[in-house]
Image (cartoon, rainbow, N blue to C red; front, side, top):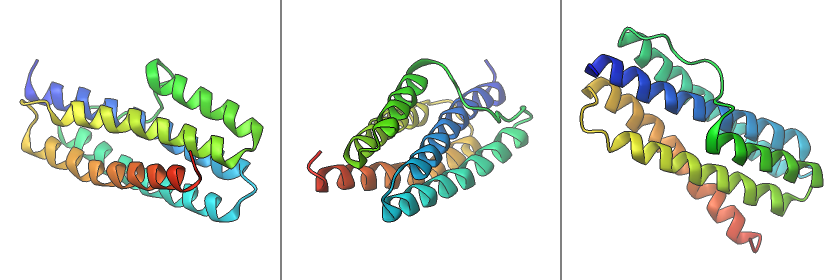
Length: 150
């Protein structure tokens, strides 16, 4: 697999997973009665959208077709399905706990992608920039979960 092809595959996987997380944050924001949480979730969704746009640009620069739809498969789908069920309960603690599980999944995806030795410098830079947002979101949701006694 050439570097360009590898870049496109790895970055598109990250994009799809980020799109799932955006969807999860938006659904959670719409379904919580806690305005402060809703604002926090919307802010994360917007930040993730910015990361997606940058990764999509990196895929296009590598000559690929940028992913523009979520994964709807594998772990991310299961995590966000659990989130939908949590949201139905309208229990903020449960919602935050499920979001944090999704963040753990996303963090693992990024760590795996960044462990790839044959990514181009451009693809690595794009993934590392998005990783900063993912890590901040993960840490914020983890701290929030623990502050709620989760």
